Length: 140
Image (cartoon, rainbow, N blue to C red; front, side):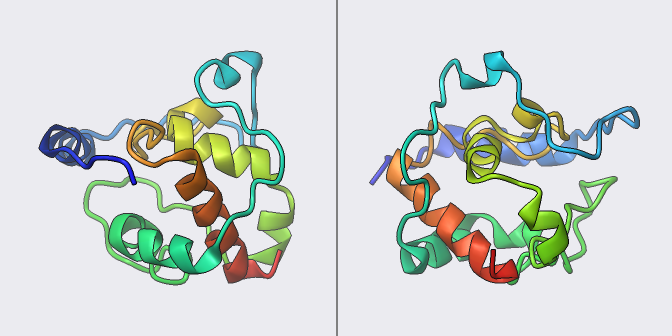
């Protein structure tokens, strides 16, 4: 398991305070060649959903909600994350996109930088576990 640092927590909290939302961001996921420079999704990207559940509750639910519905009040966000329980929306997102969104953060996939990059925090396996858990919300 990766070492969790107070510096990372401080960076995440600082990111929650300062939010910039670009109204020109595409609604469709976009992945460019540069997004693959540090985070390379390969092979089966679905890990252990039970471990993913534990990680999600600890690190993701505060913004994405317990069921991925983003049904929480988050003061640092101008735009609520999409409902990860919506099968129509989630079918549009390949596992590679979810991997990059977790690893490189929102900005790495053309979304808000409020979602920090977690690639230095989670191991590759933990990212795969999170993908497996997130997919349970929509059944995709």
